[in-house]
Length: 280
Image (cartoon, rainbow, N blue to C red; front, side, top):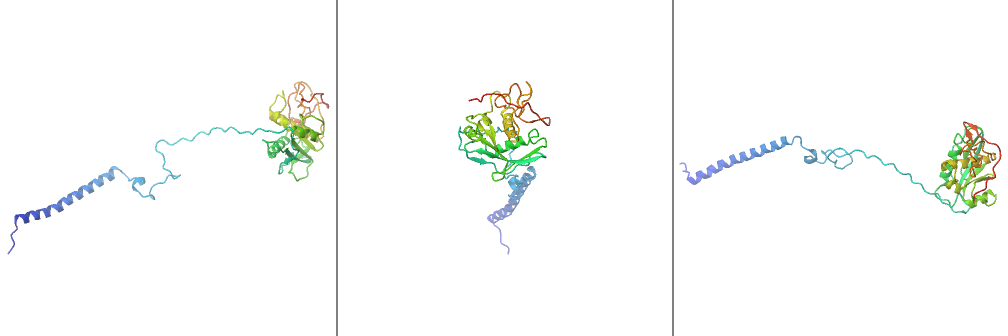
């Protein structure tokens, strides 16, 4: 005999049938909403939904900035820093000789080797820097090595050399040159080619050419004495001064000229020198 259902039992059975149906509807709505979000967003962004391995890393390990790509910066030209050359009036007469060797300067002829030394106490120019200036000047095709008659080579402190080019303080210049009180000019005495640092730094008044031109002149003039050349005179007003003219003291209407060769040949004036006073 079947049991008879009461009203309470019928209502419980109805709820049991309704709950699964409601759950199915809710689940369907959630699935539909998820599907819409995926389409609206397109392909998932690996930087936000992927793992660290799936993300595309920035080449330098930093987040790339948004907006227009940055333009390369225009480099600003750098102003060269120059150290002023300073020196005492009277140095210690001790020296720092440049190390190493230069290439052989010139293509043929007698080979003479030389050293380059800077007196201790002179600052702002190293022996290597002064040596480079000497070698560059003497290796120029307008210099003494340019006509095929001689070759020169700079060597180090412990190598045999025919002469030494010194950068000396004014008082040491007088000791090396052994020609009385001067302290102004440069000189050559035996195998000592002496460049007065005061002239190297300041040049001479009214020279009419850049300091670098005067520096080339003084190297070629004093080395020229070591190579057997004497003083010469200005050929004519307005003409280049011979390198063996005493351009440090006066040009005598000639124009500054730092090299011995002009158009590949030795350029000379008459032998002799002017009676120009040495400035005090």
